[in-house]
Image 1 (cartoon, rainbow, N blue to C red):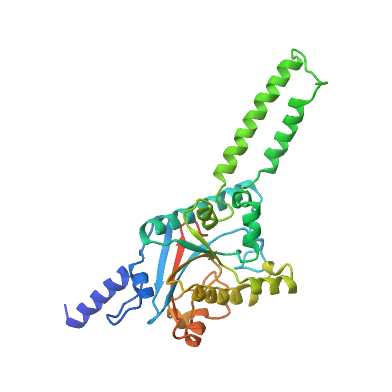
Image 2 (cartoon, rainbow, N blue to C red):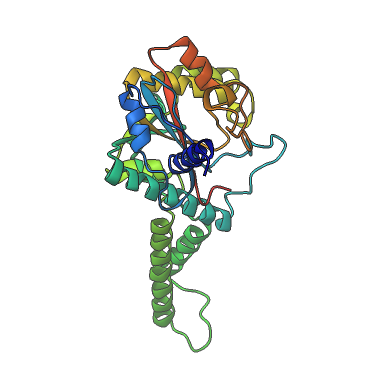
Length: 314
């Protein structure tokens, strides 16, 4: 093998082993050490891509999620499958359970102790806590709940008027009681199964495994709410890039070295300038390269990036 070919072969091997990055051997910041030590693969992930920025003080870890939004951010004219349909709720629940497992793995093996949560800010978090996080996360089943209400009425009514042949009030009441208990158990099992629908990150917080970090800037959200209460259904700079920039500010204010963020997969903090020409914007809605702009503006507060795509993200 010729020397140049030999070295190119070694470089290709290193690139493959490091997720597409050829590291230099100079001084490395703590954030970039964490990036290099971060797993190149994890159970339940389709891909983990790393983009090291020299001198970075922070490393943003974006876990790309599907979540309860009405519109598909990838295609503004199309509406997501109706997540109120049970089959789609189950699909979403399974996806968020996968994110829960990824986060739990990172907590156990990579030492993360917090997660930035999309949709949560300093204004709505106290209200969620007051109502009870478990109550907020609980997924109801209106059809089952109606059946239970109907059976409760039938079971506890003083007089049963419509009694079929070969039945008595007592036997019919006993039958209703058994059906009621069966439906209550079915609802309890359903709620336990669907405990991840509102988000794997929130479920990790509710289970006491991670501390919550606000994934939204309360002032920006208040301004958006005032301008248009339906802003979350729109695709524009404010609903995407402005929120992404605000999150970079929130992370820098917290001074987190490694910041794990659970955010919709259509968001993109990287771009061709910050992450190189190989950075893919397929399936994203991004008007600017947030990291490139931020890192140029705040050279003492730069970010590197890790993107995690779960297997079920489709």
